Length: 340
View 1 (cartoon, rainbow, N blue to C red):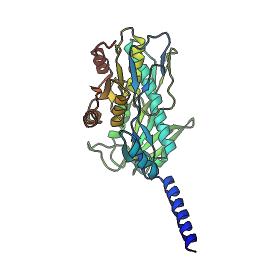
View 2 (cartoon, rainbow, N blue to C red):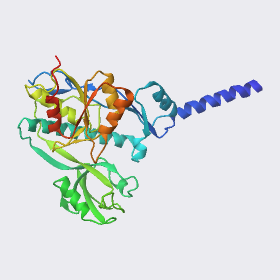
View 3 (cartoon, helix red, strand yellow):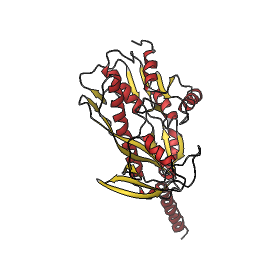
View 4 (tube, rainbow, N blue to C red):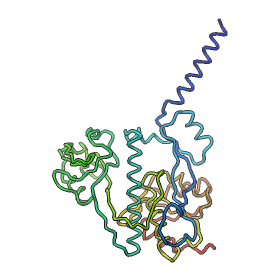
């Protein structure tokens, strides 16, 4: 009888152990990975060969993992960080989160092509078609009325033509005031009545409770092709742009050097901050990259501070190059020494 009880106890303990491995902890595991070489992924027909190596950094992650994976990640991976799960923090399911990442990458490619062609004195035909939801305040009670696949095209009957116009329409309202959002959903236009967020933001401004990003359409140059399908998010924008410029121009910016980096790219050339800088710097250093382009600190983020702290604490040899715009990035690359 005693042996049966022991065996039953072992079985129950095993079942509990296996079951707990499947229960989400509410945390993501972020760890360093090697940058993706962009030479073959960014194509420009009849363009120049890269004289050096340019890498797009990214963060590998395990999303909302079970506790055994949490422990294993901390024990066996370099540059690991444990953060609250993005799906939990944003109160969004994983499919919607991945859709947002996909939209961000699509727009990053459009912006990269636009800025590279503009650098070459081309005049690409660009159209703003609306705005997609990028983030919801978790306690905004109207957020479930908006789908992540919706494209916002008008507010209170006013057709939207710029981000600045949309921002002004929101600023003119009071907190908890009615607003009618017109969205394109499944090919049809739909009006949704919401109210602005009931409190003002840090700057004492009214805001919507939903933050959006532009959706652009570009008449594409058939000579340009991006072979990037599996990576999502906006942080590839800068490096995609620089790779295109390098392939479009006879003068080499790389000059035989290995350059990695990260940062969003905007239509005005602004380079914005991103997440996972610690892991990206470590991954680039482990892969033997000599330089790392990092967004400089500003009101939107402290990427540069985190990168410098990481280099110091981890004893990395990679050299950081803080930049705030595409123009600065090009200028800094032109300063690099020849490395033949």
